[in-house]
Image 1 (tube, rainbow, N blue to C red):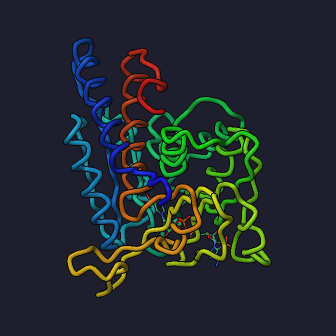
Image 2 (tube, rainbow, N blue to C red; image 1 turned 90 degrees about the horizontal axis):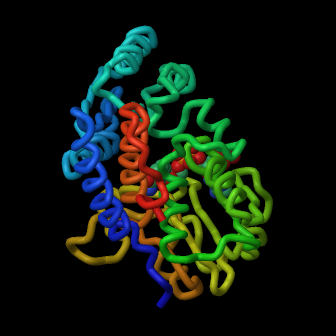
Image 3 (cartoon, helix red, strand yellow; image 1 turned 60 degrees about the vertical axis):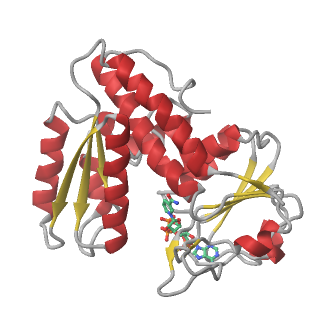
Length: 302
Ligand code: NDP
């Protein structure tokens, strides 16, 4: 059996550290960290994600401020809302829940978030800092993957990594982070020719294609580490055949890839919980900065 890269367990561990970090901080400053989540429209998956984020905040002592705006909100009203949150002294982190309804310009809204309050690390300035290797809030999903790999002592330096997907949310920052850790990185996308040939060479395969069960054992080199970022709800089906199992799957066919990989993330319980935890980490780090507390990141995250 391959090593199971258990994001749920690691997320719980980091949450405990965050809880005590906040408790210690509150001996010096009067207000807890605050995270504002802006949800626009009625995407059902977003409703679940936003509620999970609010619950996670509550568990560790972050105040959460959720705003739910209608799908036909004007760009102008949304910008106004973001400016209000930028000015709100209780708020350390702002997250724009993606995807947005059609017609709303995502990058224009992300650009309005104060880079100092950018909980998701998606502001152009913070993406630039990642590119230059400067400190700053990092995109939560790839940062969560990096923490999971580090915690499980998966070697990266000199390893051949293939990232399937090139989105700004996951694939691109993932590739930059792996490169910064001295892996040799190739990024694949929907126009990549002969994907199997490429992924077969990977010591580390990160899949963020958003295609349910795309990657089977034929794509994976024996002994590779496989990280499945994808998450999909399958209507009325169970991927495992179990009666009470949630019908969730990733981009990877877990059962068959488990037979060739040396380490693999499950779905659920792999990358998903780490994404939420890194959002909490980013918020607490912003809070420390805003309140003049000087704790480091290294004793929070592996
Ligand atoms: P996007 O749809 O924005 O990007 C998907 C990327 O995959 C694109 O670059 C696309 O290529 C590429 N791609 C699509 N099909 C193929 C294919 N057949 N072969 C190779 N490449 C392909 O998705 P995101 O990056 O936002 O998310 C990816 C997945 O991760 C989704 O399932 C999403 O739900 C999940 N996710 C999970 C999170 C978690 O916490 N677990 C957090 C964020 C996302 P091209 O650029 O050419 O179109």
